[in-house]
Length: 463
Ligand SMILES: [Fe+2]
Image 1 (tube, rainbow, N blue to C red):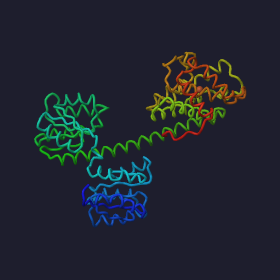
Image 2 (image 1 turned 180 degrees about the vertical axis):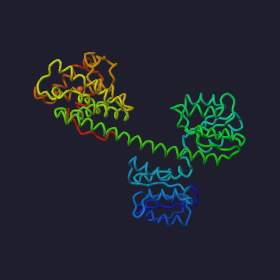
Image 3 (image 1 turned 135 degrees about the horizontal axis):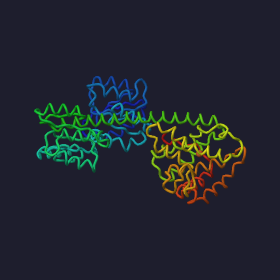
Image 4 (image 1 turned 90 degrees about the horizontal axis):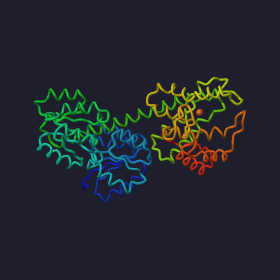
């Protein structure tokens, strides 16, 4: 670390300031302190620093607002900012990066992490470390120049001689950015850009054109076709690195915005589903709470089946609306207090196909839809609506089948008393490999043994 590194530390806690000063003392850095964001701002208006370390929670102006101000002020924008916070939630870390922070260190591990993080930020490795760049150019001299220069900046550099070779690399690796010449044999830069921007799996990779002045018209057309930027030959590595850094930071910001959008969309979908389920349960109070219990059990089973977070979220949705099709069942059947006749039973079975009609118009619900429609299928092929057998039944449907039977049979109905939990557990175990998927029964038994069959409130499963 540079001996004369000038560091501004903003923290309202005297003890935190003391601890920071002590941990930074061995670096020989020149330290200036501010007790809040506003004081830091005033200091920054008069003096330049090599690094700013700021707490988040401070009076007058908090650390995030201070960071935002620093990054939007032309005199300070280039100064790296490290956020130091006692809060370690993803949201707080995201907020830090959203306002342009270069690094984040939790207070609890500041003693061990602060100095390595400072070095990382100052070396600019935070953004470039492990970033893969694909350089496409038919000139060997340019390939060598870029490979040497960009590798020295900690990028991983892949090389291709033309668009065709680049496409071969792209079939195996996904770089973070493509840097391409325009005029090349086999496939030129314009064609390569077109290929990339029309492929769903590649179109988000930023494409930067390296062009000589005489290619300007084609260069502009390529920008129009989706290239992120261009750089005119000849250029220096520093200039190129600045452009790459800017694009990658922007890409990161766009990714965060996109993630927020998806989360908002997911919250809306969950909200609509909850309303639909409530509408059903308002009609049929016997099944009130059933969907929720089935979801609880199914998600615990899924955890034991090593589902990913995304799969668990899908199962959460499927569990909540597995009986939604009952909205289409006549009142005199759905609410009938006595045992159903054969004809009525046939009618109630239709809830597994009605749910398909209800969910079909919703985009991205295909897996949920098949899960909900298959929760009455049975491993041995004796279920409905289609009599699917074994692994032909979607896994989510097989899980729901077990959870559904357990919850439905423990509930009291006017015409029958609910069975004991142990009785149903034994029944489910007996039907392992007969009515129910063996793997799902194992996951269910595991949950039952651990919970004693009690449906505990769900933890936050990421919804
Ligand atoms: Fe059902």
